[in-house]
Length: 437
Ligand code: HAM
Image (tube, rainbow, N blue to C red):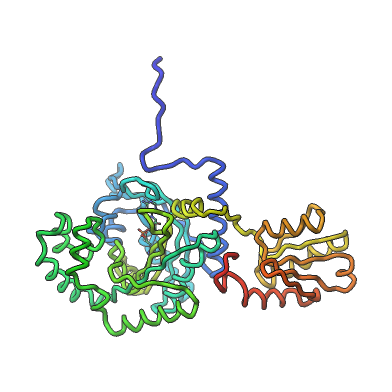
């Protein structure tokens, strides 16, 4: 028998071995916790869909649909595609299961594998993974602010800093034909300087010229193209200003980027991206925006929607680029116990705090020294240590140490949950912008 050449994985795909898989599990679970803290429920959709879901949803002239899809005709003659993105499948499921009937606002999150036949490079694969959210039912700017704030704050869970949030509005659907006409006229004057693909795009879908990676095309846009943001309606402008006001009120910094139209056809009004300088050429950690026409376009009732998706491989690249390796926080409160009575008491106090505040609480189970337990509290990322010894049991009061600021308080057992409730809403990372969450 011939010795056969070993078969290798396909270019642009990757095996994840146990050690790295552990990191993936932790990332996935931190993301799930974060989404659930915001009232989002998980949705899982099939790996492949009818091709027309993407041609209709994402748009035939986009790079994703025209160049990058893995599509085939199966033995029964159906045209199928491995999903290249998740917004269209989630919208399909939202319509198919009539989720609108269950609540006026539907909040969904996902964690999944996607397929795009792009040129593989650092941070760009052919099978890659995303997490993301979609919120249906509210056209109000506070919904944009909610989604953008989740997209911005999630990186804090992983200690990823130095983010740039770019924001733009591309206006509602009504203004699009008027703007496209102006854009087409402007680009036609310089048609010969555009790449052949963009020359075609002038007639098929002129907005997609903004997606071109060719520097000559980008320069031409800078010099000669009217910007869509300058042609949106008054209502669109007010909507966009309110989004910005809410973000300012939440202390979320952003920059305006008039050229950012995003490479998928479904967007309306707000578009956004978050980039990190440590990623190199593929610097986009996540991207998203509003898509108020998509549900209707895919056969549902007119329903506004907004969401974003982030690349997990890019998250991991950003994590490994952080100088200090950040432990992922696993607890908010660590119960430091000294003596048998304290151990017994700590179980019920921990349960009360979890139930009444939603904070993550860990009990000491190794009966270590006070010093070792405080070190452990630090390692878990806990913001507070609740210290219980014989004296505390006798007085029915715990010592609560603030791990970040160093101060401590004496709090009676019956008021512990209220104490954390108050402290959490005024100090915590989910509510403000600390590193801990
Ligand atoms: P997207 O900008 O195509 O948007 O992808 C979102 C994120 O997925 C990117 O910012 C990047 O982190 C990651 N990503 C994309 N392609 C690759 C690749 N080939 N390799 C590795 N990572 C990649 C969407 O997919 C929209 N569905 C987002 C959305 C949700 N808009 C509204 N709701």
